[in-house]
Every structure is written in structure tokens, then in C-alpha cells.
Figure 1 (spheres, rainbow, N blue to C red):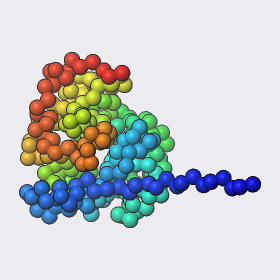
Figure 2: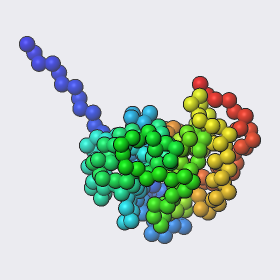
Figure 3: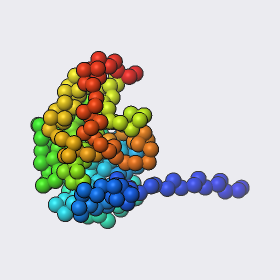
Figure 4: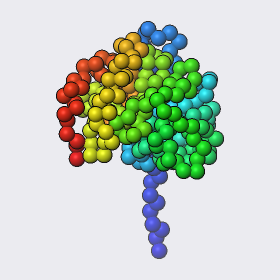
Length: 244
């Protein structure tokens, strides 16, 4: 009997820096720019193709949403000093949160309305805002889900990790996306307005979304973030019907 042919092993792609060397040259206004301080993971099936991010900081590393819990990703996280915080941007990004907390002994941060989805875990909750360190702050932006939130990182001119609150459209521009599962569309639009009131073109230059990243055509961020948000006609968006 001939042995059955072996299936080729699937090679897991490692996380990649969000800002490439070429991006670094373009961001001339940021002195001491470190292109290897923010990483993006490949889309994760456990979170419906969600993209997770990892901020490496001396004050403690921050993992934003759950990447696939495979050996490649675990080795990567450990090689960069482990995980201090695991921040969940929305209920659809929970993935294997219990396993990640057990593996890295990290603190899990989630908006209070969605903490019930993590029974038995020790979690840190917040209502409106939560400051992780001198450069990172979490902001409640309800609408996509009750506890939908973003993480703002003040380096590099300001980076907003938007979860599924804001996603790139086919032109790579950040927009809210109304679906049949959207929790509260008017609140989502109001959350965009609150971001515009909080930031300026100088303090919000990039958005890192957790889905639709294929529309970014090889990049891992949306540039000119504030200008794009300011160009949205929120009154028109408010009347959009959900995508089925």
C-alpha cells in the first residue's frame, strides 16, 4: 500500500511593521520615529478576518484585539517582551482572549457593557475613557456594538486603532459601515463627531482599522485621517440603510 501524500504545511505569516521604511522617510516631522514599534498581524479567522495590532513600549506592550493563537504569533509576542495589556475594541474581536490571558498573564481591558462576554476572567472595565500609559488612551465610541471603542496612540502624529468603528472603503478612505448587525447607527455617527471634536489634523494623522484592510492595497494604515473624517457628510450617512 502506498502511503498517502502528505498535505503541505500551512506557513503562518509573521506580524509586520505598520510603518515601513519608506513610510518612515515620509513622516519627516516625527523625530525619533521608530518604524518597528507598531505591528499588524495577519487577519484572524476567529474574529471574522479581524486584524490585530501590537504596540511595543517600555511602559508595557499593548495588544489590540486577538490575533490567531498559533506558535508563530506566540513566539513573536514573547520575543518582544510579552503582553502587558490586551485591549478588545468590540465584542467581535474577543477571539481566544482567555487563552491569551493565561499564556501571557496580561490584563484584559474592555468597555463595561461587553465585559459579560468574558465570564470567569479577571478584566479591567471602563465607561468613557481609560489611560493605559503616557502615550495610549482608550475611548468609548459606541454604535457598531454597545462597547465599541478605539485606542489612541499619541506618537507618530497620532494613530487611532479604530476596531470596526471606522473601516476603509474601496478607495481606502475611513468610513462607518452600517450592517444588519450594527447596534445603533445614530450613536455610531455621533461617535465620529466626538472624535472630530477631540482631535485636530495635527493630532490625528493615521487610522489602523481592524477589517477591510485589503482595500489599503499593501499599506497597513490610512493617512490624513482627520481630513478624511472631516470630509464625511454625517447628515447623509445618518440616512444610509444597512447592508445585508
